[in-house]
Length: 72
Image (tube, rainbow, N blue to C red; front, side):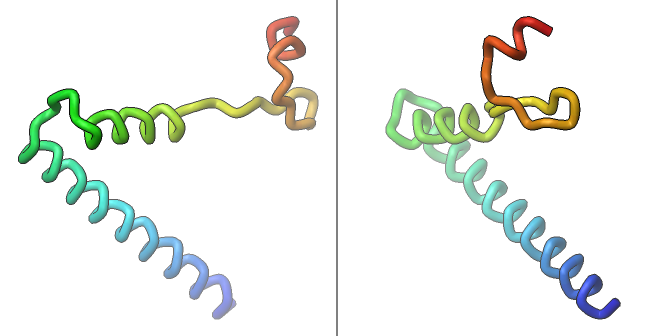
């Protein structure tokens, strides 16, 4: 039971740290603007990678093959 509590606490702290880093990044973006800067493009690239769908679960099996997914 203690192990589960510690894991949930670690997960919460990691989430909070991620939120703080995200806020700092947004503040930096606001300060620097969204000009065609290296920073702006790195943020866009990061967002695309983060939001990319890598695959789906088909019949209880993980599938990354686009042709199999399209046939369904």
